[in-house]
Image (cartoon, rainbow, N blue to C red):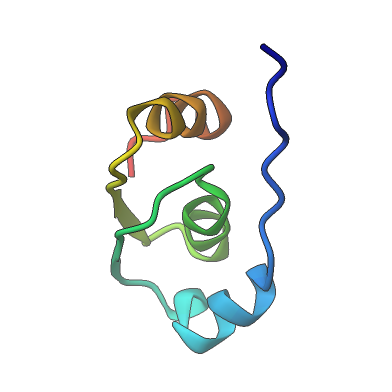
Length: 71
């Protein structure tokens, strides 16, 4: 089975509206491919993200994408 590429939409707008560049803790309840969570982590070194998703396959893919990021 071929893997579908996940494209994060409105990434900059999400980071801006959440004020992620100011630092904080975030809960991503639709973790999916991890694109928004990664953008939040990249916006400020002090950011922490907890990501949850019903689809275990997507969580595993997001872990691969984000890597060993401890935040």
